[in-house]
Amino acid sequence: MLKVFYFNPLRECTYVIGNDVGECVIIDPGAINANEQERMASFIEAEGLQVKAILLTHGHFDHVFGLKDAASRYPVPVYMHSKDQSVYEGSAAFAQMIGLPYDGYEGPIGDIMTCADSLPEGLKFEIIETPGHTQGCVCLYLPEKELMFCGDTIFRGAVGRTDHPGGDHWQMIESIKRCIVPLPPQTRLLPGHGYETTIGEEIDTNPFLCMFEPEGR
Image: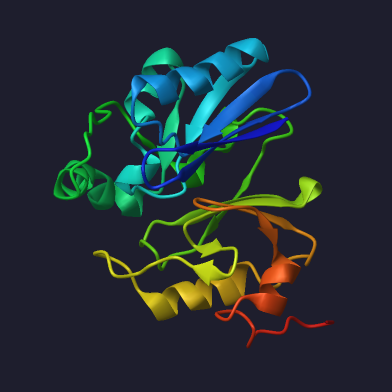
C-alpha cells in the first residue's frame, strides 16, 4: 500500500507506505492546515493502518509543516539525519520569510541512521546518505520493492536546489552519481515534489544525469 498526498503551497509530497499486515510509516509530513491534516488521518483510519514511525528525508520546512500534528496523533518515533538539525531549527524563520504559518514540533527526533529497530517488517529501508540539497539529506530505499523515496535530491527531469544554507550543487550531483545512478534502472523514484519517475528514465532524459552511464548499460 502506497499513498501520496500533495500538501502545502509548495506541493510537497507526503507519503504513507504500508506493509501486508497493516503497519505503515509516514514520510515527510507536510500538511500545513487542519484540512490537509485530516485528509491524511482519514486515509490512515479508513485503511486501518497502524503508524509505526515518521521518517524525514531532510529538515526543510515544507517537509515538516505537519510533523507536530502527525506526532500528536501517532506517538511514534520521529527520525531525521542529525546533520539536518540546524536546518530543521530554521524552519520557522524560513516559513515566516515567505508568509506561511508554522507550528513546529518540539519533541524528540532520533537519528534516522539508527532507525532500523523501529521499522516494521517489509519496510526496513536502506537509509542512503545523499548530501547536497542539505547536508543531512537521505534517500529511503526498498530494494526488494525497487522503490526509493528520494526527497529533494532528484526530481523528474531536475535535481534539488542548492541555494539554501548548507546546499552544495556538485556534492549533490556526486551523491546522485554514487548512490542512485548505479541502482537498477527500473527502480521507481518517489520525489519530494512532482511526480514519480524511474532511475532509467532520469539517466536517459534528465539533463543533470545524462552524462552518467552506469556499468552494463
